[in-house]
Every structure is written in C-alpha cells, then in structure tokens.
Amino acid sequence: MTCEDLQDVFELYSLALLEGEEKSEVEAHLARGCETCQKRLKDALAVNAVILASVPQTAPAARLRRRVLAGFGVERPGWGWLGAFAAALMLVVTLWLSVQERRRENELADARREAIQVGAERDRLIQAFQILNQPETKRVNFGEGLPQPPRGNIFVHSKLGVLLIASNLPALPAGRTYEMWVIPTATSVPRPAGLFQANAQGSAINLLPGPFDSLYAVAVSVEPEAGSPAPTTTPIVIAPVPVA
Amino acid sequence: MRKLLPAVLAFAILQATLRFKDDSGLARRLRARDPHVMPALYDRYGRAAYSLIFRVVRDAGVAEDLVQETFLRVWNRAQSFDAERGALGPWILAVARNRAIDHLRSVEGRMAAGALELDRIENPALFSNFEDRALTIDRARRLKHAFTKLTPAQKEVIELAYYEGLSQTEMAVRLKQPLGTVKTWVRTALKVLREQLSEAVVA
Image 1: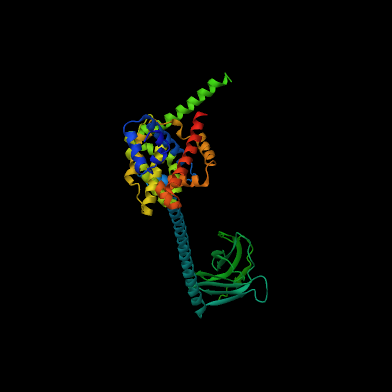
Image 2: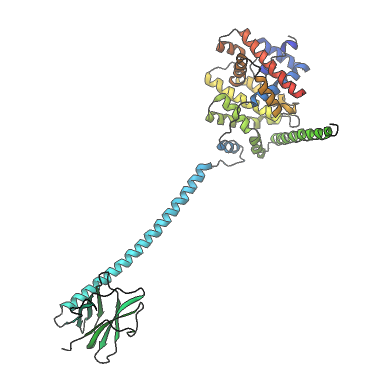
C-alpha cells in the first residue's frame, strides 16, 4: 500500500483498533522511517488527544487525589473527612464526659453535704426528744392566744440544754436571721444561743446544748445574717424561765 | 494594526513559552523520578483523566482505581518520555483511555487487541516532537463544531472507537452493518474531524 492508501487510518492505529493488512502496512511504513507516515501518526495522536479531552468534565472525589498521591509517598493516606469527623466526635464525647463527671462530682458533694445536714438534724432531734422526755425539763409558753408576735414553747433542762419550738414567726428580709439568747440568772447579760431560720410556714426549732447554770430568761431577736454577740434589736420573744 | 502586531506576537510567544515551560518542567522532574512532582501532575491532569475514564467505564469506583493505575503507569514509563519536546497531556490521556478500554474489554470478555497492543501505542516516545498546541481551548471549540457536521451513524462509530474500543469488525457486528459501510463511516467522520481541527491550526 502507498502512503496515500493509509492516510485515514492513523487515528484508529493509535487507538490500537486497526486490524489485518492495514495494521501490518502501517507498521511496515513506520518501521522503515517513512516521514509522511510519521507525521500523520503525530497528527492522529493530536486529533485523538482533542477528542479524548472533549468528554464532559467530571470532578473526581477529593479522596482520589490523596489515594493517588499516597501511592507515591508524597501524601500520607489520610482519613479525610471521616478522620476529621471522628476526631470532632471524640472531642465532643470527651467534653460531654468531663461535663458529666463535673456534674456527678457536684451531685456527690451535694449529697454528702445533705447527708451531713440530715445527720446533724437527726442528732438535734434526738437531743430535742431527750430534753422533752426528761421529767425535770421546764416548759415555758410564750405568745399564747396572739397571732403576732410568735407563739411557742421553750423547754429548759439545765444539763441537756434549751429547746425552742416556735410558730408564727414573721418572714425575714434578706440578710437577716433569728438569734436565740439565754440570759443567765447570775449575770443577766444575754449570751448567744444559736442562729436559726423559720421554714415557709413560719415554724422553727432551735436547740442550745447544755449544761449551763440557772437561766433567768430565753429571748429571740432579729439580727444580721452573721449573728451578733449581743442583741441589736428589741427581742420578739422574751420568755422568763421559772425558778422552781 | 502594524503597531498592534508586535504586541500580539509577543503575547502569543509568552503564552506558548509559559505553557511549554510549565509542562516540560513537570516532565523533567517526572523523568528524574522526583515523586514531589505528582501533586502538580495530578492537579493538572487528574480531572481530565478521571472524566475520560468515567465516560468509558461509567462507574466512579472503577474509574478511581483506573486513574490510580494511570498515574502509576505514567510514573513508571516516564523515563523514555521526551521532557523537552514531549506532549504530557496527550500522553496521559492516551494512557487513561487505554486503561479504561482494557478494563472494559476484560469485563466484556473480548480481547481482540490485547493489552500488549495498548501498551505499544502508549509508548511515550510516540508523543515526542509534538505540536504544543495539541490541547487548546480553540481546538476544543473546533472539535465541538466539527461534531455537528457528522451524521448520527458517523458520530456513533467515533464513540464506539474512542470510548468503547471497538475495532471496525466489532462495530460491524454490533451495528449489524457490512464492514465496508462501517469503514466508510469511520473514514469520513475522521476526515471531517481532522480537517476541521487542522483548519484551526492554520487559522
């Protein structure tokens, strides 16, 4: 075959699609360095390149770049978004756990505090019952028959202590507290006998453990939150303790 | 016009130089087996290679495997590539197309032109002394225009050749047409495309 016979087959040849006699003819021409055919081969490869480049362009997934480059050791095979997601998830879980841990610690501390309070309350009640149970305990009633000032009873036992059970206590403004006072017969100077708050119903219990010398009276006044060494307001309760 | 001409020429030369320099730099590092050239090479030709392979195999997962194979092959055969006067783009596209066709053939169980044949026609030495303007936007536009001049049958045989790797004999069987008819379609179609593209180079 002449070069002219072969002029239209170089595209197929360079796609590896040429068959039979045409293919062997092209190979023979190229093998003997036929310049026309060499030129046509280059042109055909250029035509093929344009056609192959003309397909609709689709962006490959980003992971493909990492995968291809990882094969050449120029980029570590990363975990991509999955890794980032896992790391973010781990961070969130860690934060959540530490928040939970903190909350649990707080809860535990609260519970411990509560247990101590309950224990103290129970001890106080046991003491209160002991005072109430003793035949030698003296009972003083105050505020009988009046809605205000408060009413209640004071139980005095010289060894076990003084127990105050009051109701109708007025609600206090913020930063104020009730303070109980015991006034010894010997000095007549009020001695601090404990701070207490009334509950929502205006009731309160306060206990001052004994022993002490004979008392002249028990009083209650309203004081600043931290308490006072001596009454700063007029007492709302003054209950004289019977001598006998 | 006389004043404008030197400026236009200078610009064209600059463009050609830049492009030439660009790819020859890549090719030189590729030949020197510098793996750090691969990111740049992938960034320039990865998308085109993937698009072409995807067009052939129609499966993203398979296409990804074949793109990886393509770049590995380019890396392994780059030593016989002509760094100064070779055409990297056309070569990579040829390698990509051949990987895709090879896959298609093995899936369809037809091995008419074997892997050896594909191997031979992607020899990098074939892509030296190449027209630097092989892959330009202008040529792409010309090609698009040229395709409008083809009949549906001519378009079909072109697609079967480039994207399915069918020989003319296989096309005749597939299209239930005499071999002579298929050959005429193929020749006429290629002639139209070739002429339209070379017009672009002349223009």
